[in-house]
Image (tube, rainbow over the protein chains, first blue to last red):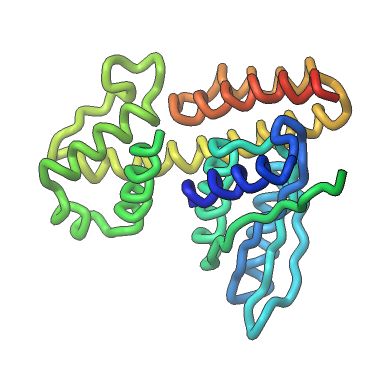
Length: 104
Length: 131
């Protein structure tokens, strides 16, 4: 996860993205039941994330946690820890984060 | 910080084990890893090793549990501070954004998480100037 964050940030920088500006990030957590996904979503909402739960492929459920951040390797690592811990606490898995390229 | 990441992965794996299984893993290498973790997650006001906890074979399991608790608490509190700070940043309120990180830095016992907050605080300053 750590090396990946650095790599993705490098790609964003090469694409001309301003990494000193706040941008939206989505964090993907998958759970075996809707109840587990909703419980994780409530916990992350207490931290301040906006969370939505959706059915995912197969029998899995997605908890999509969104927040706006100034990206940095350290910040994404720290939030990665939080997502991993939360996913594990409710029997799920953290599957990574996503951010959109901003068209200039 | 890269060493820290690797050590935290091991801490989290250890924390999932029952005490009897964890005791089987105690050796010079695991104690060295745990000492680094204690240094990173230790309390700034708690002395040379940072936690007040002794760290030898007898305390290994207790220390793993305590460090796992600190790691979780630090990640959660830092996440909350980050989200709050950037919400204030989006509202162009630099003072409240900074205050969110400063409160966290003041209250968090973990050097690792405080250091990340300080980096974010510096970046936040850059971001607010760029708006």
